[in-house]
Structures are given as structure tokens and as C-alpha cells.
Image (cartoon, rainbow, N blue to C red; front, side, top):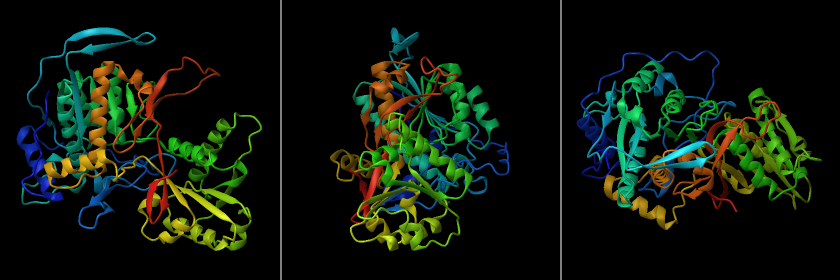
Length: 497
């Protein structure tokens, strides 16, 4: 197996891990040169977001999770996901950076057999894997200088990848692994990488990248070369077009809305549920996701639609407005797919709390960013039974999670962040799928739902019905549809019943 260099630092601490990791990466690759091409400016009004929830890490000192201020995520704001801000988080990676070590023999075909329809999968003696991450190697200023803050995500992710590769090697999964700085500054630079990097061109599996535009370019390359691409971060639904090689690990906004609807409908009647959002087109468009899933769950006939209620951003909430929505002596469920304006959410929850009556129960479903709010009084979360969707849930009481945390800390001198769990889970899952199902393992994804450390993988093929057709439709992508529903209880978020 090819393993990238060991990242273990000589002492504990977040900065030590990242500094040592960056140094070793630099030492193992001699071709770091800054990309000169600048990223094209984004058109005015283009608001796309790649990630739907902020990132937290475990603070060993306080024993709690804390929000990373420089985490590569932004608040949800539109029906499309917003990318990283150009002026603060633009990635300026090296011209070429590839780390490899101890290659196994060149892959040879051991067996070829059908896996679905006319699709054949090949079982090889070894598989080529390229890990493409934004290490920001050209920004590293040496051991005495500051580490680029936005390389945290890549380095933590890579730490998890390293541990997974070692575990896969013990299970006799033979991989040739290359680790590549993603060159995510501009689309031109990424295109050049796909044309000149032989490791990428020969890969059977690509893990990464980070940004939406880079994911699209690598997805198109994978469609040409036949490689599968496990995209860990972007939630955009328009990255791949008719590309069954593209595997989206992070559930989309629609998947979050559908998961909330299913959880609510399993516990409450449609007439108990109210959809609430700001009076903005992009927010009102989201309401259709909930109505569509409600109709599907109802079988499409005699569907009782959810009530809908919209409010202006600066609305002066009053008890009469809220009271008119609340079912007395019953439970009222408010689903609020809004997150961009924390003040709006705060005002809504405050007035709902004031409008509560004896023998009346309220349940509120919100979005992942609610976990990162700083102004809201969490007493409202407790009293209003707030639930949120989340692409991640790490159970600190799980023995497997505790074992991973100890291993990671012993090796790197710092607790693992969510990115480390993500890197480990994706690499383990991809490696085992290659071994068990061959180069076209994505066609076996739906038969292999698996509980991982940070979430559950439950992939489905995404198709777009056209002309009334519902069968034999081209696969747009495979997407992990599993979304965790968390409940705020005893002043922390836990997995909901």
C-alpha cells in the first residue's frame, strides 16, 4: 500500500499537529510552486453555499465542543449553497503537490463480472486512490510562522485518512495512494491538474475535493476516465450531470428537508404541522420540499398539506399571530427552514414561547446552523423542544468513537475534529467497497448501508424523471440520503428518538 508520510507531532496541541503535518507534507513533495492564475470573480448576486452546517471541535480543556471561527463553512442563505468567500478563504494551493510512498505492484485485473445491467466491474490486484485536498501548501511560512488557518480542514481530514489507510492495510486491502494539493485557486489551475497529473488520470477512486467548482471539474474528469469520486464536502446538487461515478457524501438541502418531514410525520399529523419562513423567494421555495415529501408519504391522494406562514424580516411578532397558529390542548409543530438571520429566529422562538398555554405543547424543527447561534437563549431550545437536522452526529459515549479519539490523540497530540472522523469514515468505506465490489462499486452502494463513526452512509441513486418516464432513467449521481435528527435536551443536542 502507498501511505502518505506519518504526521505524528512530537508534542500535543492543535498548532503543533498542523505545523508538523504541513512540514512533513512539504518535505515529501518537492514541487510546491504558487499558482499564478487568479480565481475568476463571482458574478454579482450569485449566492451558492457548499456546506449546510458549521464545524465544531472537542475542547479537551473544557470537555465541550466549541465552534471553529475559521472553519470552511458559511451560513445557509439560499436554495443553492454558497461557496467560500473570495477575499478571506480563497485557496491558493501549489502548482503540483503529490505525496506517495512504498507503492505496491501495478494493478492487474483478477476478475471482471457484471454488477448491474450492462455495467461490468473489475476486481484488481490493487487499486489506485487519489486524495485531493486543499492543503494551502504555498502559504506555509515555516515552523515559526503562522499556519494558514483554512488548512485545518484538510490536515484534520488527512489525519483521519492516514489512520484508515493503516487499518485497511491490516485488512489486506491493497491501495496505491497519492495525496494531492487540490490547486483550488482557479478553475484553470484545476483543469491543468487533471490534464497533467498522472496519478489523477490513473485513479480508480478519487477522495475529495473541497470546493464546489473543483468537484465539478474532477467529476467531469472521472466521467471520462471511469474513476469513482467520493465527494466529502459539497452539498450542491448540480455538480454532476448524468454521472453515476459521482458519489455525494454530504446530504443536500432537499435531503435535510425530507428527513425532517419524515421524522415529524412519524410522530404528528399533517394538520399539526406549520411551515414558517421569512417572506423571501429563496426561503419560500424551500417549503415545496416539505410539501412534496408529505405528499409522497401520504401516497399522493387526499393529501392534507402543511399550513404555511411567512413573516417579514423585521416583523413585529405578537402573541395573537402566534396564538392563531397554535392548537390548544394539542401539540403544534413548527418547521422553520430559515437560518441566515439569527435575530429573526430569536424573535420567532421568543414569541412562540410567550404564546404557549397550559396543556399546549410546541415542537420546533430547525436547520443545522441553529447549533452555532450565539445570541439565542438556549432556554427557548429546551422549552420549545427544538430539533435540528445534521449531516453529522458523533456519539461520545460510543466505544468505537472513544477508541478512535484516543488513537488520534496519541498519534497527533490533539483531539480529532469532525473532519478527522469524516476522512477516516470515507477512506474506510471506499477501500472496503473497492475490495468487495470492484471498480464500479457505486452500483452496490444502495445494498451496503453502513453505520460509520460520524454518521450513517445510506446512498441512493438520484435520477431526474423526464417526459413521464420513471424507469431506466440516467443516474445523475449517488447521494448519501441519511440525515441525523438531533433534539436539544438537557442543554445539549443529542440524537432524537
